[in-house]
Amino acid sequence: MKNRFIQLPNALFEGALAELSSEGKLLYSLLMNRRSLSEKNNLTDAQGRTIVYFTNREVCEKLQCGHDKVTKLFRELERYDLISRRKQGLGKPDIIYVKEIPDFGQVVSLSADKQEYRASEISTCESEKSARNKNESNYIDSDQSFTYEEIEAMIKEQIEYDSLSERNYGGVLDEIVNIITDTYCTEDRYVRIAKRQISALTFRARISKLTAEHIEYVIKTLEKNEGRIRNIRAYLLTALYYSIDTLEADSLYG
Picture (spheres, rainbow, N blue to C red):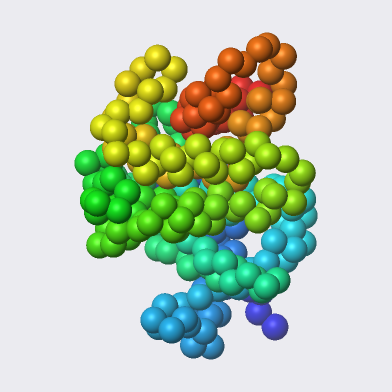
C-alpha cells in the first residue's frame, strides 16, 4: 500500500499568510484533504457547493491538542478567509466551506497596523445597505435591510452566544450584546469611543470582526478591573472596540 500524504501548499508560507500559525497551516491542509474527499463523494449543499465535516473532537485527535486550541485555530482560518462555517444546531456538526488560498494582496494581516476597514461599504441599520466583511461568515448581506431583532440575532451568531452563555458570565454577556446591537443600529453619524468621535461606518466595520474570543477577553478584563467604573456601557463599548488590537497584542507579548 502506497504512503498517503497531506499536501502543504507553499502559498501558506508566503506573503501575509506567512503570519498564519503552524497549527493553522496544518489544519488548513487537513481541511483541503477533506474537501478533496467530499468532491469525490459529491458531498454538496443545496447550492451545489462542496462541504466538509470536521468536528472539534476529530481535530483534537488529529493534532493532539485541546478543544480551546482547536476553536482558536478555526477562528484563525476564518480571519484569513481560508474557510467559512455554518452552524446547523441541534448537536449537528458545523458545515465547513474550505476556500482556495486568496491573492496575497487581498489577505488581511492580523497585525493591528495592517488592518483595513472597508467602512464605505458598511451602512446604517434598516435604511441603508449592509456589507459583508470578507473575513467572517455571519455578516449582513449588502442587498438587504434588517430589523433590530435580526441584527441582534446575527451578532449573537457571530460571537457564538449560545456557547458563551454556558459559561456563567451572568448579565454582562447580554449587556454586551445589547451594547453592540444598539451602537450598530444607531442613526448617528459618529460613535463616542474613549473621548474620540469615531465614524459609525468605521465602528460597524471594526465591530464586525468580533469573535467569541474577543468577548471573553473583554469580560475577563472587566473582572480584573479593581477600579470604579462610572459608566459601564461606555467602558464596555471602548473595550469591545479596542479588543481587536489589544487581544492580538496580548497574544504576541504575553
